[in-house]
Length: 314
Image 1 (cartoon, rainbow, N blue to C red):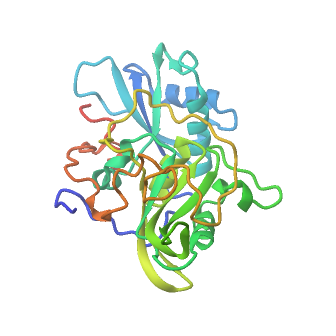
Image 2 (spheres, rainbow, N blue to C red):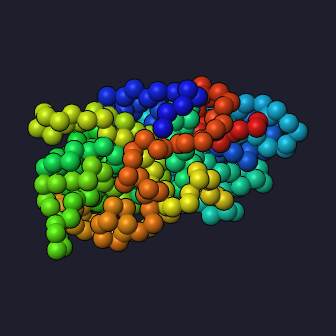
C-alpha cells in the first residue's frame, strides 16, 4: 500500500560495504551536559581497536524541552568500526553502560526515507523477510552468493573459506526460500512461493542487513529480474513498537551452515512451511501491505534525517 506521505525508495542494488548509511549510530539517555569530545572518549574506552580519529562527527541536537537528557548521532569512518561499536555496547551490562551516571542506549541509525517507508525498522529481531524473489528455480545458493558478495563478513559457517571469520556482529545462520508443497507431502524444489527468510546470529546484524539490502534488483542467470525487498520479520501483532532496551541484540545461537533446500524450518507458518510459526506478520500474502497507517516516525531531520525516528519529540 502506497501513501503520498511515504517517500519512494529507488534502489537497484544493495549498499556498498562502507556506504555512509551503514556508518551512523544513534544514542539516547545522554546527560544534557555531555560534550561531543566526552562521548567520543567514552566510546573509544569501550572499543580498544578505535581512536577518536575514527569518529568523524558527533551531533548533539539541543533538546526542545526541559528534560535533563539528550540524544546524539555519530558517524564513524568505516562499517567495520561501526559494527565494533555496536557489538561492544551491546555486550555491556547496565552498570558498565553508564556514562556520567546515565545508562546509555544505542541503535544503528536508520535513514529517514527507509524508516518512513517501513515500520519494521523499530522491531528488534534476528529474523528477516525476503519479498518478491523468483518463483521458479532452486535459487537459494545463487541468492546467498549474491548477498555475501556485498556482505562477506556475515557468511554462514558452511559458506566460509579457510581462515574466513565473521565480523563483530556475527554471521547469517541460514537463508531459506519457501517452496511450494507437493500433493501428499514434501516440497517442489524448483517452485518457490516468491519469498523467504534470513536468520541472523544477532539482532544487530539483522539491523545492518535490513538497511544494506532494503531493496535491490536481482535475477537468476540473467533472467527474470525482480526488485527484491528485505525487511525485519515481525510476529503477528507487532506494530513497530521498540523494545524496552536499546543497546543491541543478544549474541545467541550456534554458527551453523545454511541449508541448500527449502524444506528445513524453524519458524513455522510463514508460508505453510515447517515451524515458521508466528513470524512474518502475514507477509506471505501480498507484499505491498507494509507500513499501512505508519505515521510520524522520524519526522525530525536530526543528523541529516537519520535515527529512525528514535529522537521524536526532542
